[in-house]
Image (tube, rainbow, N blue to C red; front, side, top):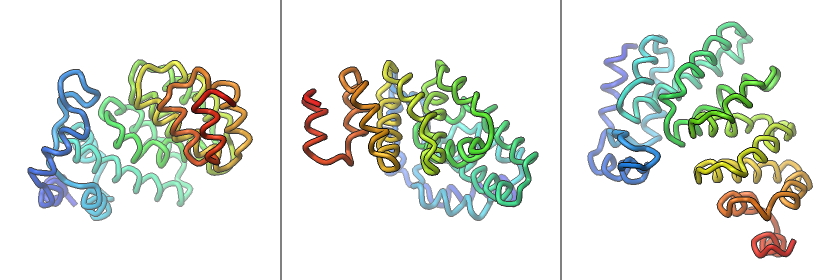
Length: 238
Protein backbone atom coordinates (compact mmCIF):
# COMPACT_ATOMS: atom_id res chain seq x y z
CA UNK A 1 0.00 0.00 0.00
CA UNK A 2 2.52 2.57 -1.24
CA UNK A 3 2.35 5.76 -3.25
CA UNK A 4 4.55 4.27 -5.95
CA UNK A 5 2.27 1.25 -6.26
CA UNK A 6 -0.85 3.43 -6.49
CA UNK A 7 0.72 5.54 -9.21
CA UNK A 8 1.81 2.46 -11.12
CA UNK A 9 -1.70 0.97 -10.88
CA UNK A 10 -3.16 4.20 -12.24
CA UNK A 11 -0.69 4.44 -15.11
CA UNK A 12 -1.46 0.89 -16.15
CA UNK A 13 -4.75 2.31 -17.49
CA UNK A 14 -3.23 5.37 -19.23
CA UNK A 15 -4.10 5.95 -22.87
CA UNK A 16 -2.54 8.75 -24.97
CA UNK A 17 -5.68 9.12 -27.12
CA UNK A 18 -7.84 9.55 -24.02
CA UNK A 19 -5.33 12.04 -22.65
CA UNK A 20 -5.60 14.15 -25.80
CA UNK A 21 -9.39 14.05 -25.62
CA UNK A 22 -9.40 15.05 -21.94
CA UNK A 23 -7.10 17.98 -22.66
CA UNK A 24 -9.81 19.35 -24.97
CA UNK A 25 -12.85 18.27 -22.96
CA UNK A 26 -11.65 19.86 -19.71
CA UNK A 27 -10.73 23.15 -21.40
CA UNK A 28 -7.02 23.25 -20.65
CA UNK A 29 -6.05 25.86 -23.25
CA UNK A 30 -4.87 29.42 -22.51
CA UNK A 31 -7.54 31.43 -20.77
CA UNK A 32 -9.83 28.42 -20.29
CA UNK A 33 -11.02 27.22 -16.89
CA UNK A 34 -8.65 24.22 -16.83
CA UNK A 35 -5.66 26.07 -18.23
CA UNK A 36 -2.45 24.10 -17.94
CA UNK A 37 -3.94 20.90 -16.52
CA UNK A 38 -2.31 17.65 -17.62
CA UNK A 39 -3.83 14.21 -18.17
CA UNK A 40 -2.59 10.63 -18.18
CA UNK A 41 -5.61 9.47 -20.15
CA UNK A 42 -7.25 7.29 -17.50
CA UNK A 43 -11.03 7.07 -17.56
CA UNK A 44 -13.07 7.43 -14.37
CA UNK A 45 -14.04 3.75 -13.78
CA UNK A 46 -10.40 2.60 -13.59
CA UNK A 47 -9.57 5.53 -11.30
CA UNK A 48 -12.38 4.42 -8.99
CA UNK A 49 -11.12 0.83 -9.10
CA UNK A 50 -7.61 1.90 -8.13
CA UNK A 51 -9.06 4.09 -5.36
CA UNK A 52 -10.88 1.09 -3.89
CA UNK A 53 -7.65 -0.90 -3.99
CA UNK A 54 -5.64 1.86 -2.29
CA UNK A 55 -8.30 3.34 -0.02
CA UNK A 56 -6.03 2.82 3.01
CA UNK A 57 -3.22 4.89 1.55
CA UNK A 58 -1.54 7.01 4.21
CA UNK A 59 -2.46 10.69 4.41
CA UNK A 60 1.02 11.98 3.45
CA UNK A 61 0.82 9.91 0.27
CA UNK A 62 -2.72 11.10 -0.43
CA UNK A 63 -1.44 14.65 -0.02
CA UNK A 64 1.21 14.02 -2.68
CA UNK A 65 -1.41 12.69 -5.07
CA UNK A 66 -3.70 15.63 -4.39
CA UNK A 67 -0.89 18.08 -5.17
CA UNK A 68 0.06 16.27 -8.36
CA UNK A 69 0.30 17.98 -11.74
CA UNK A 70 -1.68 15.04 -13.16
CA UNK A 71 -5.44 15.42 -13.11
CA UNK A 72 -6.17 11.72 -12.58
CA UNK A 73 -3.84 11.57 -9.57
CA UNK A 74 -5.77 14.41 -7.95
CA UNK A 75 -9.04 12.60 -8.73
CA UNK A 76 -7.61 9.40 -7.27
CA UNK A 77 -6.68 11.23 -4.06
CA UNK A 78 -10.16 12.70 -3.71
CA UNK A 79 -11.92 9.38 -4.24
CA UNK A 80 -9.61 7.77 -1.69
CA UNK A 81 -10.56 10.55 0.74
CA UNK A 82 -14.26 9.88 0.16
CA UNK A 83 -13.71 6.20 1.03
CA UNK A 84 -11.80 7.13 4.17
CA UNK A 85 -14.38 9.71 5.24
CA UNK A 86 -17.31 7.36 4.72
CA UNK A 87 -15.63 4.74 6.89
CA UNK A 88 -15.00 7.30 9.65
CA UNK A 89 -18.53 8.65 9.39
CA UNK A 90 -20.10 5.20 9.66
CA UNK A 91 -17.90 4.37 12.63
CA UNK A 92 -18.76 7.61 14.42
CA UNK A 93 -15.12 8.72 14.45
CA UNK A 94 -15.97 12.42 14.75
CA UNK A 95 -12.48 13.71 15.47
CA UNK A 96 -10.93 11.81 12.57
CA UNK A 97 -13.73 12.93 10.25
CA UNK A 98 -13.26 16.56 11.27
CA UNK A 99 -9.53 16.30 10.60
CA UNK A 100 -10.17 14.87 7.14
CA UNK A 101 -12.63 17.67 6.34
CA UNK A 102 -10.05 20.24 7.43
CA UNK A 103 -7.51 18.53 5.18
CA UNK A 104 -9.98 18.72 2.30
CA UNK A 105 -10.62 22.43 2.86
CA UNK A 106 -6.91 23.14 3.19
CA UNK A 107 -6.36 21.75 -0.31
CA UNK A 108 -9.14 23.36 -2.33
CA UNK A 109 -6.58 24.96 -4.66
CA UNK A 110 -5.91 21.46 -6.00
CA UNK A 111 -9.63 20.60 -6.36
CA UNK A 112 -9.51 22.66 -9.49
CA UNK A 113 -11.91 21.29 -12.05
CA UNK A 114 -15.61 20.53 -12.05
CA UNK A 115 -15.24 16.74 -11.99
CA UNK A 116 -12.92 16.93 -8.97
CA UNK A 117 -15.45 19.04 -7.10
CA UNK A 118 -18.40 16.89 -8.12
CA UNK A 119 -16.68 13.66 -7.08
CA UNK A 120 -15.98 14.87 -3.56
CA UNK A 121 -17.75 17.97 -2.22
CA UNK A 122 -21.08 16.37 -1.32
CA UNK A 123 -19.55 13.10 -0.15
CA UNK A 124 -17.09 14.75 2.24
CA UNK A 125 -18.01 18.32 3.16
CA UNK A 126 -21.75 18.06 2.54
CA UNK A 127 -22.19 14.84 4.48
CA UNK A 128 -20.09 16.18 7.35
CA UNK A 129 -22.25 19.32 7.59
CA UNK A 130 -25.56 17.48 7.68
CA UNK A 131 -25.78 17.82 11.46
CA UNK A 132 -23.31 20.67 11.98
CA UNK A 133 -23.18 24.47 11.51
CA UNK A 134 -22.80 25.45 7.86
CA UNK A 135 -21.08 28.85 8.03
CA UNK A 136 -18.23 27.53 5.90
CA UNK A 137 -20.59 27.31 2.92
CA UNK A 138 -21.19 31.06 2.99
CA UNK A 139 -17.45 31.66 3.18
CA UNK A 140 -16.78 29.39 0.22
CA UNK A 141 -19.66 30.84 -1.76
CA UNK A 142 -18.06 34.30 -1.60
CA UNK A 143 -14.64 33.06 -2.66
CA UNK A 144 -12.94 34.49 -5.76
CA UNK A 145 -12.20 30.86 -6.67
CA UNK A 146 -14.74 29.33 -9.05
CA UNK A 147 -13.97 25.92 -7.60
CA UNK A 148 -14.58 26.94 -3.98
CA UNK A 149 -17.89 28.51 -5.01
CA UNK A 150 -18.82 25.28 -6.79
CA UNK A 151 -17.77 23.23 -3.73
CA UNK A 152 -20.24 25.26 -1.65
CA UNK A 153 -23.15 24.54 -3.99
CA UNK A 154 -22.40 20.85 -4.62
CA UNK A 155 -21.94 20.32 -0.87
CA UNK A 156 -25.64 21.11 -0.35
CA UNK A 157 -26.70 17.97 -2.20
CA UNK A 158 -27.04 15.80 0.94
CA UNK A 159 -29.19 18.52 2.53
CA UNK A 160 -31.57 18.44 -0.42
CA UNK A 161 -31.68 14.67 -0.14
CA UNK A 162 -33.15 14.92 3.35
CA UNK A 163 -35.52 17.76 2.47
CA UNK A 164 -33.43 20.64 3.84
CA UNK A 165 -33.64 23.10 0.96
CA UNK A 166 -32.86 26.47 2.52
CA UNK A 167 -29.09 26.45 2.01
CA UNK A 168 -29.34 25.48 -1.65
CA UNK A 169 -31.93 28.18 -2.34
CA UNK A 170 -29.93 30.83 -0.46
CA UNK A 171 -26.76 30.07 -2.39
CA UNK A 172 -28.68 29.85 -5.68
CA UNK A 173 -29.93 33.39 -5.15
CA UNK A 174 -26.34 34.54 -4.57
CA UNK A 175 -25.14 32.81 -7.73
CA UNK A 176 -27.66 34.56 -9.97
CA UNK A 177 -24.95 37.16 -10.56
CA UNK A 178 -22.03 34.73 -10.80
CA UNK A 179 -20.01 35.33 -13.98
CA UNK A 180 -19.08 31.68 -14.57
CA UNK A 181 -21.15 29.31 -16.71
CA UNK A 182 -19.90 26.36 -14.63
CA UNK A 183 -21.59 27.93 -11.61
CA UNK A 184 -24.79 28.41 -13.59
CA UNK A 185 -24.75 24.71 -14.46
CA UNK A 186 -24.08 23.60 -10.89
CA UNK A 187 -26.76 25.90 -9.50
CA UNK A 188 -29.33 24.81 -12.06
CA UNK A 189 -28.51 21.18 -11.30
CA UNK A 190 -29.10 21.66 -7.57
CA UNK A 191 -32.29 23.62 -8.19
CA UNK A 192 -33.52 20.71 -10.30
CA UNK A 193 -32.81 18.43 -7.32
CA UNK A 194 -34.79 20.81 -5.11
CA UNK A 195 -37.71 20.41 -7.51
CA UNK A 196 -37.54 16.63 -7.20
CA UNK A 197 -37.96 16.98 -3.44
CA UNK A 198 -40.50 19.79 -3.44
CA UNK A 199 -41.80 21.15 -6.71
CA UNK A 200 -43.36 24.21 -5.10
CA UNK A 201 -40.01 25.22 -3.60
CA UNK A 202 -38.49 25.22 -7.09
CA UNK A 203 -41.36 27.02 -8.79
CA UNK A 204 -41.47 29.59 -5.98
CA UNK A 205 -37.79 30.34 -6.55
CA UNK A 206 -38.26 30.43 -10.32
CA UNK A 207 -41.31 32.69 -10.19
CA UNK A 208 -39.31 35.24 -8.20
CA UNK A 209 -36.03 35.04 -10.06
CA UNK A 210 -36.37 33.50 -13.53
CA UNK A 211 -36.38 36.82 -15.47
CA UNK A 212 -32.80 37.47 -14.33
CA UNK A 213 -31.53 33.89 -14.17
CA UNK A 214 -28.67 33.03 -16.54
CA UNK A 215 -30.11 30.97 -19.37
CA UNK A 216 -27.97 27.92 -18.60
CA UNK A 217 -29.05 27.93 -14.96
CA UNK A 218 -32.71 28.22 -15.96
CA UNK A 219 -32.51 25.39 -18.49
CA UNK A 220 -30.91 23.03 -15.99
CA UNK A 221 -33.39 23.98 -13.25
CA UNK A 222 -36.54 23.40 -15.30
CA UNK A 223 -35.39 20.22 -17.04
CA UNK A 224 -37.82 17.93 -15.18
CA UNK A 225 -40.83 20.25 -15.14
CA UNK A 226 -43.86 19.57 -17.38
CA UNK A 227 -43.27 20.83 -20.90
CA UNK A 228 -45.91 23.61 -20.84
CA UNK A 229 -44.37 24.99 -17.65
CA UNK A 230 -40.86 24.73 -19.10
CA UNK A 231 -41.88 26.69 -22.17
CA UNK A 232 -43.60 29.33 -20.06
CA UNK A 233 -40.38 29.98 -18.16
CA UNK A 234 -38.23 29.91 -21.29
CA UNK A 235 -40.51 32.32 -23.12
CA UNK A 236 -40.96 34.65 -20.15
CA UNK A 237 -44.70 34.01 -19.93
CA UNK A 238 -44.91 32.46 -16.49
